[in-house]
Length: 498
Image (cartoon, rainbow, N blue to C red; front, side, top):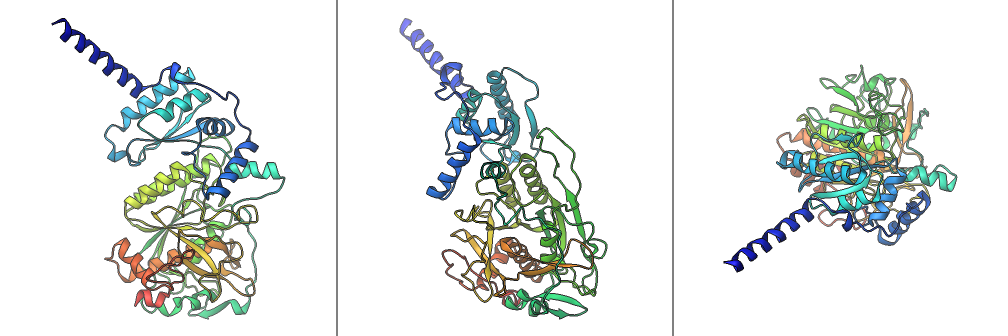
């Protein structure tokens, strides 16, 4: 009898000890070997070194001290992904997991107020204020944590400060309000009086219009918004041969350097990049002598999710996440195009992409456009994700010669000819009415390819995402064997819609 009671007591102590370890860590479990945070210079140097040597940097593979240092240097804000899935609706115990996380934070931070910045309604993701290294260590030990990352560490901003020059993941921030008169060799005039960019002939797009114009298909655009000064992407969206379609403009970006700030600053483009992308994919086949888009009868749902193409701050990354989830929940949207990114993964955006993909969306992302600073980077995030189709730009009459500032790599799925021998790129609508411009890089290659997908889906409205994708592949240069750096290559759009 005594032996039986002894065994029961032993089992009780073992059970309670295990549960204690699972639910939270005791102070004795946390051993701090490096008490001071790394500087921004040290953090950036490590990110660059890892990217050069391993091809990719990951917060998940970084030490507790490194992650905490970046959180500390980034306004002390952390992004936490939890649960067995990114999808809150697929996680019945998401609320209790979130409560356990907050208890752990409260315990190690020694406070219970001003901890939570945001808790996503659709994703198992939240943003919190953290100051102590012990908190990061404890959180990363919890069994229901998928990731703990800095939510406001500004890698590119720190590079600019450290190097004394304005360097980014694009040739600039991707912004510009310039207007440029088009060379007559860079377009052909099509009825009623629209300018069809030179690239349309290279991809057999004009001939494809006899079969499909994108009617009935809605494309979601995640970018810097669309100019309120460009009526062909507003009140005159139905002009010329474009009719019966809609453009919806949304804003989910908070224009503030302070993470606690709230209040979106509207849908209007204040950069110029988003306007160019919307034009490339779906500008009307107008009677005003302006450039036409690939899918000139497709609908657009645009999102101002960031201030520019470099997703470097809290509000940029949060805006993109929100845009992906809202577009995922929009049953009218078939295709999502985003010509922005980062050189390393952002957990909340990754969750947003997976969420939209789980809703059946066909997602196109830019493979990357660089200055000399980031030319050591391959395909950027989120284009490298399996849930997205990565697109890059190539030179005229080629399918395996990237544009001068474009990225290439094993993750690329399609290419688009966007750089002429003259150096000119794709004619698009300007930010302002009655004006034109050129736009290049993997950005316009991505937007144009999203337009091609709309043409294919419009021709075959009952098709699934995979059927549309397979037809695009079958109509491309390297089908059935993708090129190691350029995927399936250039798409013959006429073949894709016949």
